[in-house]
Image (tube, rainbow, N blue to C red; front, side, top):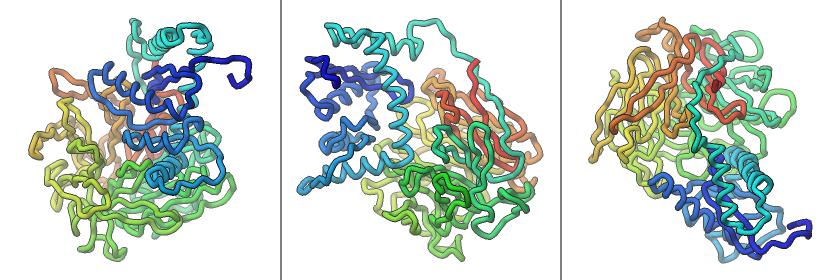
Length: 558
């Protein structure tokens, strides 16, 4: 051991699943082997064990490990296995990588990932979940005895049973949600979750206000609208009249400049800019505004890791002429910062000009691997763009498909999701009506053929959706509700209650079915909301902001 009192002939290594905390691999190595030489074997063993346990080949997608595992070789091996590494980097002097281009590229990619918000979160969760298992195995399990591999596996199995309930008669606990209204004012129609003051607790942002956990004290991000005001009311922080529109249709939390502090990205009114506001790092005063892109078209823009580099990109329509957001040169694109994030972000067009879904008031946009070739495609209500091997190639091939509600000018939807809902091996698409009635899943058949199935049409204006495994059963559910007063009372069903539901996915005889659970009838959704573990209890909560206020629905297990 490091204290010099114990000399081991072997060292044990284990891998855990970051979602459940379950141990998925156990290996025992010779003690003279360094961590950097044993990681690859443990990752391969983890993939084999998961396949054996589930009966399905599931590749390890990401690995988070401490600085003892960091080397050019390990990050390069991870990249070769198509695993995104999040390996803490030890402080070292200058290192020359001459002649090892692949190693340098892998090291730089790993460094970028660990500095991003997701990297920080994964490394934090690794410390929490892995050390818990480690303590159980070595303290409770008496691992300083002989027959180390057998004992490690037995004690690890007991630990896994404690986590998952294997071998117990415990029934699933009923799920309910406790409603917290953080604010009664109309701040925005988008919301973000992030630790903005670095106190270890997740805060919320709605438009140009952030709410400090756990008491949800409001703080102004800026005091005036970033662009031409829509219907801002006098006062600080900014709020808007419910019979109008805000300057915030979507919010995302991201450490844009890599300084370790979470910033706020705000998608302004459709056809206008997207901004990011730089966290003042604990200082008082307004957050500095930076331009991401001067035009953001489509009312359902996404902020997702499209190209698999560990950083999220803005996916939206854009026009090169801010004065003509619906001009003939508009494209669908993914947009991300170059080396200097303070400069206007780089736009990568993927479509031909004037493509579907690229108008300022277009509805419906999503990202997912439609054809299961391992690359994320882009989906709109009129079809999908197939991602080429090189994401920078343009234009991507477009496949026409009716994946949304038919509209006067073009098909419509809200956030769209790609998932194998019926479990038949190919991916399907989920979409909804943003201004009328209807939620659908579109079943995929060979040859880009699709069949639309209705899920629900009991309430209208489902202008935002989130896909998430609410009950933790391994099947992905979805959350949606009414965007109350979306068109100022002109939509069908506008005056019905502002409901919020989660739809539980089940399968029977090879077919999906959804059980609807009502959370509330006086809040609803905006144009974008989030599902996230806000309070750190490993249960997914729901956060929304709309014309009725700002809400946090805390999941409770009874």
